Image (tube, rainbow, N blue to C red; front, side, top):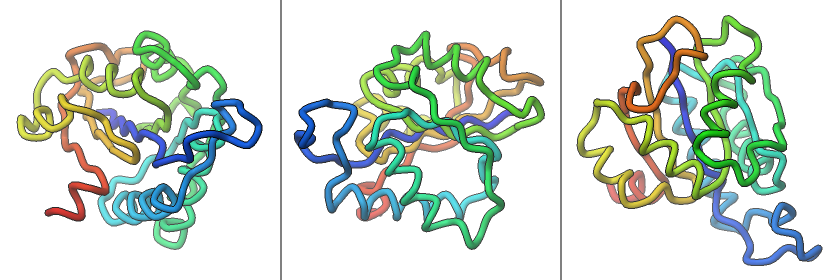
Length: 178
């Protein structure tokens, strides 16, 4: 069994001072939402043992703030910053999941990236599971939204479209309303 957690970066400023999209930082709400999601992840084991993060500032900040909220309660995962996750389409994200997961015995993977690729790959991975979560996820993977999948496979390279069981979909907005 493998568990995949897809987390979209938290809310960001509209423009970066540099003018470069990958330099955009989290805004105040993004900071709060990233901390809230980190707290939620720490309170809902199992915790990821490997984290793959886009090199964009907003993705790295999302991880750093989420980790700060959870670090006293969970074991530190292996973290990799991957430039290829920035702007990745579903095929690139799936390939990253299949190949960039070290150590090989990692059974729980958290990936922090961007839409539209993260939303699209989440929809493409659903092969069953939580119908309400799938319906909510169908509309959008919002900033700081988290989709959790289980795959009944031995190795990450066996993860495939329509093979994932959507365990749950959660976001700061859903946590506030429910």
